[in-house]
Length: 225
Image (cartoon, rainbow, N blue to C red; front, side):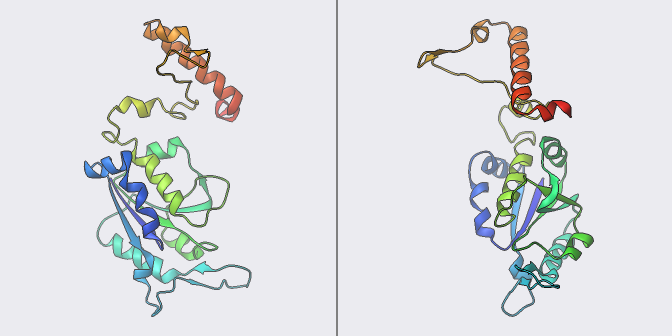
C-alpha cells in the first residue's frame, strides 16, 4: 500500500512514521508513506495557500490552486483508490472503514487547516471524507496520522502476530476483554482462575462473556448496531 499525504506542515507528520509498527511496516516494504508540502505547489510568489472567505466571517480558507495542483501532479503518476479529506464533518472513522481501506493499493489524504478547504476541491476531487471524532483539531495532520496508523497496522505482516489485530476492540463490534500478565497477584488483586485452566474453549467463552459485559456497560450503542 502507498499513502500520499498533502499538508502544509509535513514535519509535523514525520515522527509518527518513524517509530514502532509504522516504522517497521515501511522498512519492510509493507507500506509506503509520502508527505507532500502543499505550499510547494502554490503559484503565489509568497507561497500563500489561504485567503479570506467569500461572504465574510472569521477565519481563512485554503485556496483551490495549490491543492488542485498537488492532487493533479500525483494523479499523473498513479491511480488512487481513494482521495480522502480529513474533516470534522466527515464520516465518523471506525474499524470497519479501517479494514476496508487496508485493502486498497493507493490512498491520498488531504489535511485541512484554518476554516477548511474551498468546497470546490471537495466537489471535484475528494472521494471520501473522514472524521476521527466530534471535536476540532488545529489541522488535519494528527487525524491523518491516526487514520494511517489504523490502516497500516492491520495490513498482513505489519504486526508480527497477525491474530493480535483480529482480536482488537471493534473488530467484532465488541470492546476487548480484560488482559493480564505476570505476576499472578498484584496489590491484592489476582488473575482470574479461568485463565490458568488450560482449556482454550473455556477461556474463549470467558473472554467473549467479558467483552459483551464491558461493551454493554461502556458502549451499548455498539450492540444496537
